[in-house]
Image 1 (cartoon, rainbow, N blue to C red):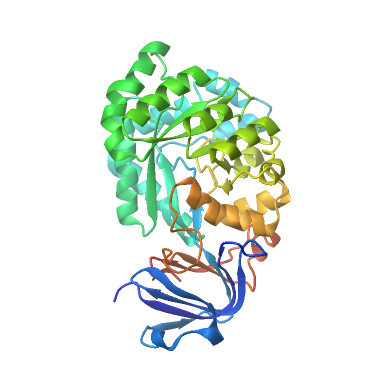
Image 2 (cartoon, rainbow, N blue to C red; image 1 turned 90 degrees about the vertical axis):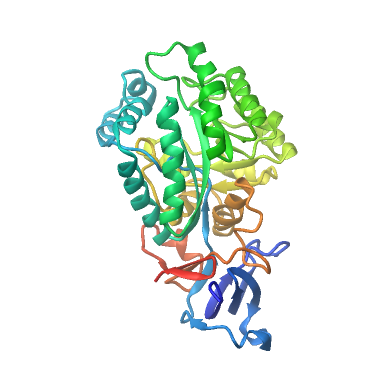
Length: 402
């Protein structure tokens, strides 16, 4: 049967099993039995039940195995190139100044509007394949580079097509409220986002997102958009507290958002609100790395009991990063998370941020998404940043890389 596989010869297996004393549930000399794309059994190879002898076996030669990475925040579908803006930032121009001059998001909007559907799919599929080869098995994909009805729909339809062409799972998010479209009056644009655009995009999305920050949308405007999205059946998530503390994290807690993302300027008060509301903090260390800005207070959020996830924020302007292993390294080296915390946040944390309860761990009944590392331990992910450590990838019980 498709999706049946017995993975043996695992030197170290990180299961993320609940209540593990080491957080990531390490088992040495392990095996994983998979039936119909789901984990049927995982544990020490010496304890493997006899009932799995009929499954085709695959010996990974003592390598480490971790859950497939869940990238819970990306802008994968777009056209254009913003390497010139990267150089402008290196020369000292601010992100907001570039945006005000017609660059930034507006530059990508112009290119994305002009691109054909096939070109958008081809570009995003190439990025998705590179992500998959680096162990990502589920990826969230936002719209937001259209800012008009037709292009926002085109982006979400392209995201669905990427999920059909690349063997990873795509979770679509409507981000019509990225910034106000150029040449459109602010109130007029808000009516468009909460009206015709939302009506057209809601059937193609699972979530509604808003960039609630300085220079984007206010807390009051974001609340209005999210309420409309909720009425259309979309669960809220938010970009907040990236450029300044505006109160967006509090709004995420108020509306029961799935996640509150960025949080570079979050406070202990914000952490308490997020923890109490059960909102996942999706942290994006590659953005601060690219923009040479202070990192989000990961240590404070984790210690406050907030559920933390890590993601790439893959986008053409502020984080052209496709590698979750690199994000794990940044989280350890620049955010202060331990290797165990960073791995958990890049797998189980990301799954919780996307309401994917059966992903991000290797336990009975979980989706059998695994990354096999060409290393003896998951600790090599932050220890060897920039190395090509993913040796093979299993998606739904099938080997899709390696």
